[in-house]
Length: 264
Image (cartoon, rainbow, N blue to C red; front, side):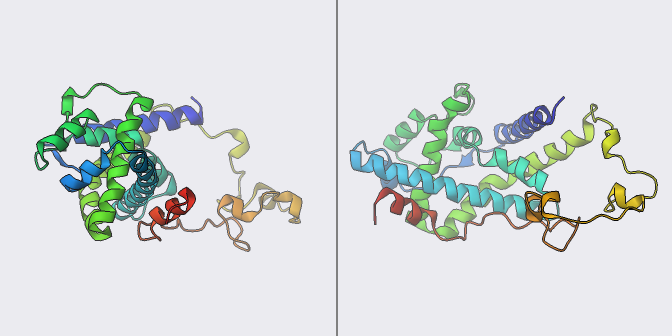
């Protein structure tokens, strides 16, 4: 089994754990708390609103990307970057947004808003059809669009409170699945002979140094630069500590999206 195969299998394991958590939740999840009027604007079919929704979709993707990264880092503060990226790859995906939306509680909304949301497969629960990755995208995009509109309507603090309550459970389940996957794998390959250290070599000591040979570091010996492997100049083999993921407290991505779209 190749490394790509293992990564794909790990992704599916984490995704299944998150899906199971959502589907087994004893209560429906809180939908994006956008007002009824906000949802009506969202569903307007004018060309101007379609353009605005595209901008909100891009901004919502950035907001959710940052929020899920923050939740992962706060839930698992001392783990490795492989775990962070594996969980985040699922947590920020349209397939998870779509599955989450299918289990939203739509009861707080007006009847016409509920009809609009059900047309996007929001709130259908187990009655929602199976979706491939491409089929999940429209629902995921609607989730992102509504999220950005909610940030604009209610502010960042309320968005954070809602989003962290929504994603913390699935992310904990995904973290447990990540650890279980690597623990229970039975096909762990033995280390290749070329990567085994000779007698006398330490973990950070190259094999040629263990044999007593002197080497000269040149530019060609590290063509991609020491930073390419996450090492700072002068630190040799020492890895830098993982940095905190992108934060939703960064400057509002919505403004940048509007600049690209030519808006104000």
